[in-house]
Structure formats: structure tokens, C-alpha cells
Image 1 (cartoon, rainbow, N blue to C red):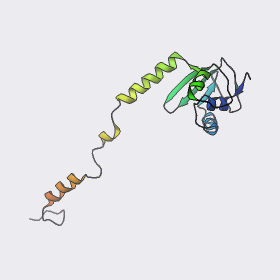
Image 2: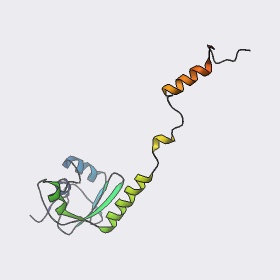
Image 3: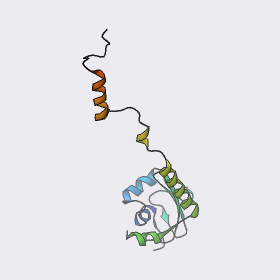
Image 4: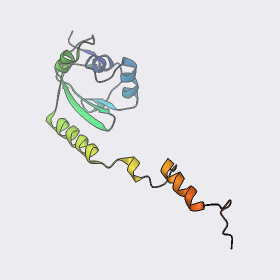
Amino acid sequence: MDKIRIDKWLWAARFFKTRSLAVDEIGKGRVQVNAQDAKPSREVRPGDTVTLRQGPVQRTVTVRGISGARGPAPVAQLLYEETPDSIAARERAAEQRRLAPEPALGITQGRPTKRDRRDISRAWGNRWSASIDD
């Protein structure tokens, strides 16, 4: 076997959990083979360059082996070799995500906590409406 469909190879190399997910990503234009958009039936051979996007990260790998069966992760990693530029970009993206502020910390308003509700209750005292009674 010297060539295989790209969707089957992506599944066997463990880039996607199922072949249907691989087909969906290929259909959305997120996978290129040798700098050309791929179709699920496109065949790849050892030496081809595959560029794919997984979430926010774009990976570029070189096909090293062909397998039609999905095996354990150590075997799947032998099917490809990631380029040094891709590894560096992936590490930079991971570092930026790690240093990014927590989105929830930017929320200044929202549902009051139990402590906030107690403080609000004390501030109102015996008043029954928001209007100021003179």
C-alpha cells in the first residue's frame, strides 16, 4: 500500500476521532495537501505535506507512513513528522493562551453573591420601595 485516502489517513494518524469528523473538516477547507485544498477522496503518499487546522492551531506535517487501520498513539505518531515551524507556532499559541487573562475575571456585573444580597438587604433597611421617603 503506497497511497491512501486523506480522510482515512487523518483518522489513522489520530488527528480526528472519527472519519466523519475528518471528512467534515476537509469539507470546510481546513485541510490542504501540498498547498491545495483537499477532498476526502484525495490520496496521500509518503512525502506529501498536509496542513490542517485543529481549533485555533494550524499544523503542518509531512506524511512518513501509510496505514489504513487506527492503532495506538505511539504507532500513529510514526505516520507523520511535524515541521519545526509548526511546532514553534503551536508552542507560541499555547503560551499565549496560558498568559491570557481569565475571561470571567472581566465580568463586573452579574448575579449578586449571597454576601452581596445580604449587603443590599442591610442597605435598604426597612424601606419597601426604591423611592426616597422624606
